[in-house]
Figure 1 (cartoon, rainbow, N blue to C red):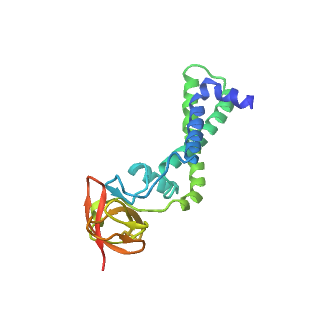
Figure 2: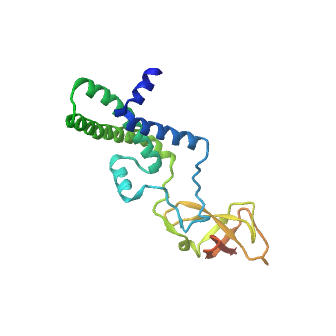
Figure 3: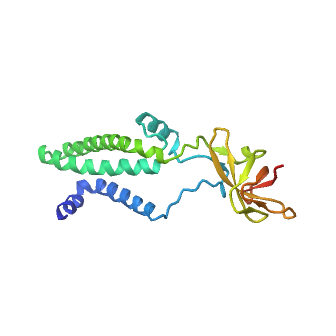
Length: 212
């Protein structure tokens, strides 16, 4: 244990030690349920998207076979394995090539690039079984796009103050949205079909009516 601590404390390993600790820290926090990904659009004007880390990361992920694993998971996997590989290579390279000055810095840069490549490669293999845990919701859909669609009540009831319903998107996926009915109407029960009439941007809810 002391040997590992000594490795992590070496100045040329600080960056990789940070990568390892930040990855483990995020995994621990996620495991405790502090971060929770919800599919509801309440409070949002876009629905049906999973964090892909932008077009660049999405395209890169497809090339490396990352699938639909969220970028937050991919980045921590890459950082962790780059950190482990970087420390291992640092200890081997610096012990093998006794260089000083700019050659030492060049060696550290080469190590960084090599460890990054290893980290991305290992993460791509590990993410392949993980991608089946994450549902593909496709591209983001504007909230107003589901106005006029038929949904089904998924909560115990829907009234003027509370309610949720499941909507089937054009790509075949489903998403749960917050819905409300007019105060003078009778509440809708679980499983009933409803028609989405409008979207209230201020409250971030859909106004609905019973579908006959």
